[in-house]
Each structure stands twice: as C-alpha cells, then as structure tokens.
Length: 129
Image (cartoon, rainbow, N blue to C red; front, side, top):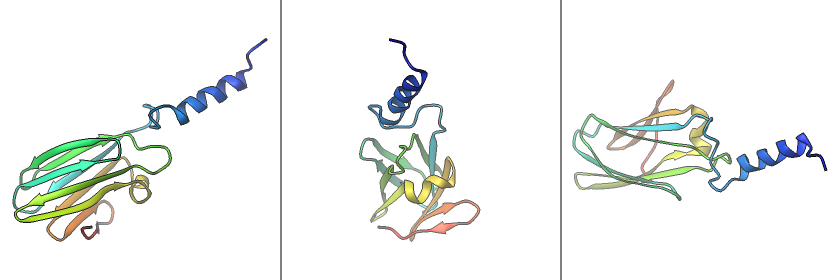
C-alpha cells in the first residue's frame, strides 16, 4: 500500500497542533514580557501560569524583570503575578492572550503604585485585581 502525501501532511499537522505540550512549534517567535519597577522601592515579583511557576524575583527600583515563553495556539495562555512592596500586596494578569497576544512578541509594562501600565504606541493603564 502506497502512503499518500496528503495523509503524511495531515499527520504532521496533527502532531504540531495537538502534540503533548500544546505549545506552538519552536519556529514561531517567543513572547517576552518585561516589567519595569517604577515604584521607587524594591519590588518582589512572583509570576505563574497554569503550567509554569517562574519563581520569586527581587526587582530593584528603576530596573526590570523579564521572562520569555511560547503562547499556546488557542490564545488561552495566562501568566498571573503577585507584586509586593513596602506594605502592599497586589495581583495582576501580566499576560492574558485574548488581551495581549495581538500586541506583538515584546510586551513592556511599567509597575506603578496605582497599577501596571502597558507601554506601546499608546500607554494603557490597568487597575490592580
């Protein structure tokens, strides 16, 4: 029995789309999220997704913390973070695919006392959760 090229292409497509990691193939650009601490004091950041815990990071004033990841193909990738400084503890979804995925592969945020602001052509600020 001769293998059909169409069957081979369909099989490879299924492997890429529904493989064990449900991630985009490595030839797709990764996304980098950068958060700059504009609080004037040290900031503790702890970010997670449902699959990854990025650990706790200390970010000095006026410096940044960044991480890189592959968003999934279903636009459901979510990274949520806690932010601690002075006597404050706040939470925010720093990457929410429906909101952020179409904004490019490099997302820059500034962290301020009243909430994070996404930088770009237009600055968009959000309240803490």
